[in-house]
Length: 158
Image (cartoon, rainbow, N blue to C red):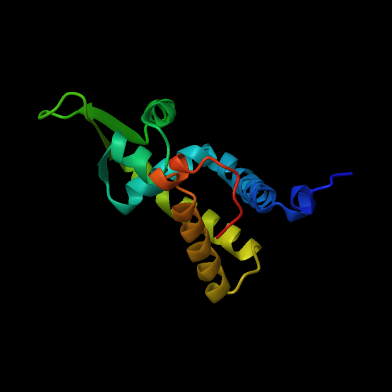
């Protein structure tokens, strides 16, 4: 038995988030597999439906991933005919991503899936948006900054 109550599983915010995230992603996968895409591919596609042409670095930044992590996803959805990738004429290091007609046409099916997932939460629209806002705030707060690096001692919250 732990002598530190803050180490009990039920007291872990990280585990509550982890379990909730896994549940939501499992539910997405249940429907996304019917249209032949994975959850990471879904995330890339929704960034493109917001604004059709982006470069790979912008997508990685929006999804809070490193570029090498999204490159295989982009390659796969390109092979599926959902996007095209092309090098920028101004800077060959930049890879521009554009939806194909097939990728554009998939948006309606995915919108229905997202609606099903949102409904499955049983949250009111107000609570849904409040939870989302809280999680975005949490994400911002958890970014490592110079203050964290300078203070590696174990301190409790101030």
